Image (cartoon, rainbow, N blue to C red; front, side):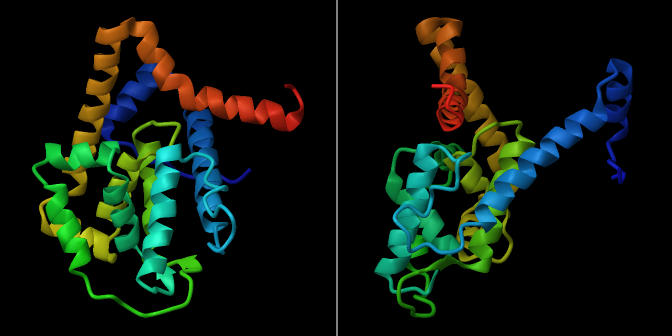
Length: 232
């Protein structure tokens, strides 16, 4: 079996050794999840089907809706490809996702972001936005990486925001970074927002309600898996 070296900061390496964590098993599991999710994105080649987001099983319903809105936006402007600008426009027009609250938390006005996106040049004309652009595909892959880095078992709109900021060549990243959104800052804001949400749920309905909310996407996927293999 081939070996892959994993380099850790000294303090983390010391803690791993002290606790005795099974590094190989943990890394293997994380890499398996990464490969599955990135492969799912790369498999979304043709966007002209009934539901082009059907393969994005790790994405939340809201995140998948954002992708659908992005496809519609690209078609409305007559683009040959769905770009990062369209993904960002999808985030903004969906209107109720955590990414928008994160932008507000770091003093980036979503209205100004929308103005920045709408002020971009139209780009190359096409027929039906049948595929993701190279930068959009890269941003979606970075979205998956950000979710895994944060230890999340789902891909949400907040991760998409991080992916768009981190992608170096897309128009969306240029707009966001131009208004002051940087990867480290956004990542901290996402973590704080999620921690605050879980605490709010705990205060409102007890810890059980907060845990139940956090497990909802996992349980939904398990139900679907059981249906596929005939356990239900």
